[in-house]
Amino acid sequence: MGMLEDRVANRRTFAIIAHPDAGKTTLTEKLLLFGGAIQLAGAVKTRGEQRRARSDWMKVERERGISVASSVMTFDYREKTFNLLDTPGHEDFSEDTYRTLTAVDSAVMVLDGAKGIESQTRKLFEVCRLRDMPITTFINKFDREAQDPFDLLDDIEQTLALDVVPASWPIGMGRNFLGCYDLFNDRLVLVSKGKNNHMDEGITCNGLEDPQLDELLPADAVEKLREDIDMVRGLCPEFEVDAFLEGTMTPVYFGSAINNFGVETLLNGLTETAPSPRFAPSADRNISPLEPKVSGFIFKIQANMDPKHRDRIAFMRLVSGHFKRGAKLKHIRSEKTMNIHNPVLFLAQDRELAEEAWPGDIIGIPNHGNLRIGDALTEGEAIRFTGIPSFAPELLQKVRPVDPMRAKHLGRALVQLAEEGAARTFKTRMGSDWVVGVVGGLQFEVLADRIRTEYDIPVNFEQTELFTARWVEHDDPRELKKFTDANQASLAEDHDEAPVFLARNSWHLERAEKDWPNIKFLKTKEQS
Ligand code: GDP
Image (cartoon, protein in one colour):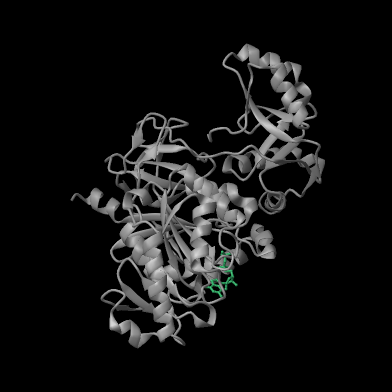
């Protein structure tokens, strides 16, 4: 096997999707612990705290106790390199989450054992489904009273229309949670009380009839386990790798992240079954990770990660080839060559210069605003990666500087924020007001805070009567002009100067669509 094949085969790039509070942060921390990336449980939070203390704009985040910014954590486990992409859990920031999901090859779906599938789990799952993404399920909090495991499996199957295959099976729950039976490896894994940060202590059994089970577990628990497994084997299909990789079947693990329980079994499962970097769709063809030429796309921009340097970091998912520091890559949108001399690699607790990177890896590229979400960097080929979502904003507000003299500065700040993907910004044709569109209401607060702290412009957001925004297009520029001239009062331009129709209500939009049947009213616009 060549070096590239070898590295690709050993990469696992994934994200965790969960409804808030299901235990994503806790599981992340435990995965890093098992991966040897952090020494102490709590380090994820500590690092978060330090970062927050350093950066003012995250005040909103701190006040609300939510995580706004996502990051990347890389760790090694059993000769595999894992890249875990963190996603903000709060639903107002789902747009960022959706984009992050374009940069991973599989997802771990964490459920709260007492709650099963929740609203946010479902939404995030739908995004994964659009991309046929393989999902591994972890049902958490079995140290508490949980739903019956059969009901949980049924919930996943019914709600998500997904075939479920238990990979492990819980023995008891709550105070009587004794451990799990690892169905894929015929191992009994028992909870060991009192020891923190221990590894799961597995005992290999010779099938369910192994007399070790009777020695180690109370008689009623063994009996129930054997009955349950009988039923599981009767009811659930066998695990099929292909169905998993196509995203139609999910292996299900049970555990208690807070007690480190079930995490090692999950990690072993990911090592064995989670996919290595997949093909990336582009306008012309699917790009294989094994293509020797380097290519990648930007899926996220983060501004002011380090307040001392007012630069931005563009997160690039490497799609193909072996990237080396100093590489000269073509920025397809601007057709300019960029010398990537200081790419950043993200480690659990730190960042360092990336000397090299392989497909599936994420590197951070510091820049001053020339890189945008959806941009491709290649060794020359004009690749246009597809499927990076951009959503029509559902909430629109006007924004004004407290000091009217600062209107121009505000305009520049808004364009930058729009380029970064933090919001949509529109400048109205009449009156030249700035309208900001977001998907979730909390984004307004974050924006106001960022504009004040990063650009030193105190602003006010004001309610508008606007209902939604649609990008308008027509193949013939003259036709488009006719439409825009006739609808001046409802027109604005986005940060790329593309025309946008601002509808006052659904009737207004329907009316315009009826009156101008040849104009396209687009809900989404491809990024970049
Ligand atoms: P997130 O919002 O999904 O990131 O969830 P967190 O990891 O922050 O967990 C939410 C709450 O559930 C916290 O209070 C955790 O301590 C708690 N929690 C996480 N995992 C477990 C678990 O396995 N058992 C129990 N009992 N609580 C847990």
